[in-house]
Structure formats: structure tokens, C-alpha cells
Image (cartoon, rainbow, N blue to C red; front, side):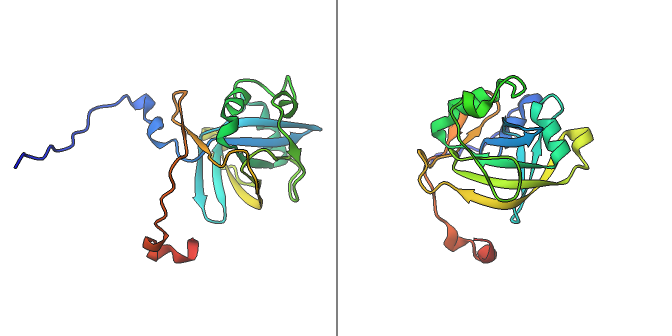
Length: 189
């Protein structure tokens, strides 16, 4: 019988290690401030609970930063794979100089709880309020609490996508249903 090969780790550049943990789907953050709506692309975020609570990184170099700081609210939209290139392009320009909804042919929809518009073209939208800014100064990290949730009943594409962190993306594929094994978490599923 042949000897089993034992897995072996090799060193990896620490400054690229964030690519291991680029977690959830790429997001669009919608804000509204001083009569102007804006969109920005975010891939640095973290789910923080089932309530839903999440954290996003957003710094003062972003046009949306002032809107988030001053209004304390936004919409977190989960785009589908069919608009991946638009989402990348949104992240490479400033809303200070343009109306991104118009420029990228996306449709704003009024929500129920915050002034920022939903992105009707996306799979899901979560109206949010900032509930914690303790790490905003040092880490540009804001904790958001969802206050209303929306879904698109007939999306153009039902797949979300994830940034690897190096300009490449992973588009969702096969879904594996293991709910029957989640015996400890029945109340959450």
C-alpha cells in the first residue's frame, strides 16, 4: 500500500493574507446625503450575528464616508453576478463627480426605514443604521444593524459573487443542503 502524502503548508506573504478571508459577497453600499444618493463597492465586511448585524470598512477617502458618518444610515445591497463588471466599475470612480445610479443604469427604490435608496437591480437590500463607531477612528470599521430587509423575487441572475482581493472574483455555484446536520442550530435555520 502506498504511503499517504501528508499535507504541508508553505509560507505565504503576510501582506496578501487578507485574500484568505475575503468572506461574504461583494456589497454595494447606498447612501443619501445633502440631496444626493451614492453607491460604493465594498468587499471588506463581516457578518456579526443573526439579528442581522454586520461590520463594514469605509474610510474618509471614500465619498460615501461623510454620508455614513453624518446620517448614521445606509443600505447594504447584494448584487448579482450579472452586474459584476458594473459593481467593479462603481468601485473605481467617485460619486462626488457623478450620479452612479444613472451612470451605471441601476434603479433606486425607496425603502421604509432609511433615506438611502435600495438598489432594485440587486438580489437583496438591507436598510441599516450605524450602531457602533468605536473602531471607526482607528480601523474605519462601522457596525451596522439591519432595520428592514428586501429581496428581488425575479432577479436577472440569482448568483452572488465574492472578491478574492487580487482583482479576481468567485461566482457562486453549487449549493449543498446540509440543514439536516445542523442539529445544534435548528433555531437559526
